[in-house]
Every structure is written in structure tokens, then in C-alpha cells.
Image (cartoon, rainbow, N blue to C red):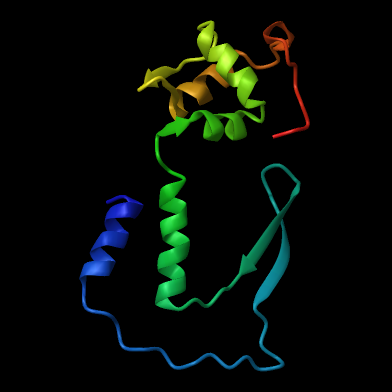
Length: 138
């Protein structure tokens, strides 16, 4: 079962009884940090534990936002953010066939998995030929 199915199933089931309100106590810790030695490599591992109490509405909102970002098809703007390139540069790469993309109603769409594969294949490649180079602007 994937995350979206779990959310749907939870939304369709009867709501659990309301939890008692959380009242933090001065001595109660909501986070912890520990360093453990890795016996195999001889290095230290850092373990961070963070506890967060959410209402069912807050949890549903958080999980909903996670599911929204899991869509396999991205728009030009989403792909630009994902690749950290200007939209014009991403559009030019798609237009000349360097970047895996397809058009729907004249608008570019990108499969996230194809972009990840493209990044792995083109790791360290120079994108200056598209006329923009890397930019600090998103």
C-alpha cells in the first residue's frame, strides 16, 4: 500500500477518539541527539530523534502536501525548480531534444524519473551551449 492509499483509507474510516490535549512539562524533552560509534567503519553516526504532535487535520495537511509533490509528471516551472535552472533554459533543452520531455496542448511536461536519469547521465556536463549557463535565479 502506498502513502496516498493509506491516507484515503484513514480518511474513510471512523475517526479515532479525540486525544487528550498535550501539555508540555518543563522537564520533558521533545528532541534528542546522540552519537554512536560504528564498529565496522570506526566512524561516528549521529542519531537525531524529533517528536512532533499533530492534530488529525494537521497530519492530513502535511501528508496531503507530501502526496502533491510525488506526482510523476512535472510542468516546466516544476522541472525548472527541480533542475535548479531557468525556465527558458529548460525549455531550450527540451526544444532541442537534449532534455527528455513531451508536450500536452503545446505545454512542456517532464517525467520526474526521466529527469533524474538524465541528470545521472549528464553529471558534470556543461550546459553553456543552451545560452544561459547556471544561474542563481530560480
